[in-house]
Length: 516
Image (cartoon, helix red, strand yellow):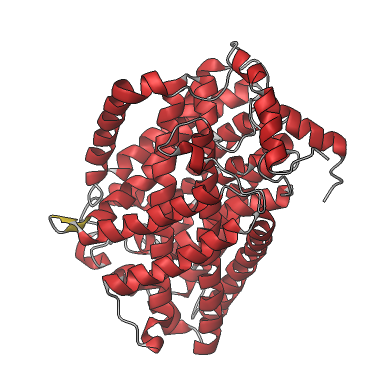
């Protein structure tokens, strides 16, 4: 790591003070650590494996060979546009803050709610994915049965441990997410090598062969539909896997030289995940005895493929590494969600804001925000598992919206940035600068990508996502105009920043931040 001098530190603090905030969180993450948090949340060993059926029971081999790089590119355009903004405004709230500065109080508040609900439900969904992976890998051997009670107890334990580590300070969390970064690289390569060795033949053609396994032939993962739609629906797997890289922005106030490190880490986490995910998933597809048989397995395809071809001892070692990586993915998500809750609360955006914005002087972490986010994620899974609409559990319906909500929270600041470039709202760029032409190109590509994600994200079986999104917008409209418009001030802008300097100094003294 390059030397972090007092000059760098005072520069980081000056940028933060210039936005009207105190250095309450502890700044000790390197650029690699900032990268590792996003890389861990993306976690190709979580989404790439738990959602694999969307490809194998969709368009088959081509869903990986062609679909994965295409889906990763769709996710990348958001990361590039957000990187430009993150360099200019490196704060913990990230998206919420950008939505306010580049737009107005309402756009900031709306961005915050999209991002917050997205992060809390995605934390629940990631840990549920980890639970199902654990059950598939070790459940049979341990004699565990999948019941709601087992699921919620398992969830409470793993989420509780994730919250506890976060509570103990960013130093420990960063050490574990750094380890997670190396673990994901190593396990993805190990899995790829094992698959290539275990494959009967290397039939590269299947990676570019379009099938249509919708309906019965694919174990009903997707309803029966045309070959074009099934390919488009399969793009949801890489797009939904490669999300959460806003974590780099959320940990800005804990990152050394944030204006330089954050944009590079955000884009790097997407590119490396795309590359290693591609190698791993292509190798897995080449190992499958037959694509037709694999498709009929539906959601069980990963375990079925491993059972068919891989030595049991090797398989269990890989399963253990994947399980640990998935737990660390949840750990990084708790970090991201808690920083979002903290940042929104210090501007009075949530009920009980003053408690949620408190930073522990001992651990220098937003303790109340960490536990609140974690408890809400478990309660969400529990509550939504008990209620069904028709045949579908509410949990399934909400998770189909989760990623749409996250991408909405990405697109609002990007669109506002497109309109605000060069105006008084955004007249100063950060050190990482694409230039006007490139930023505007990526911003427009992001808007097109958002339309595509929304259109494919609300097709059956996720057709409820449309009603939930529209319902959410109606509710936020009522809440904003009814209550929040007159109450919520938004982040400090203009003169407000200067007035806050005494408060900032007091807040820093309270947590023992000396500036040296």
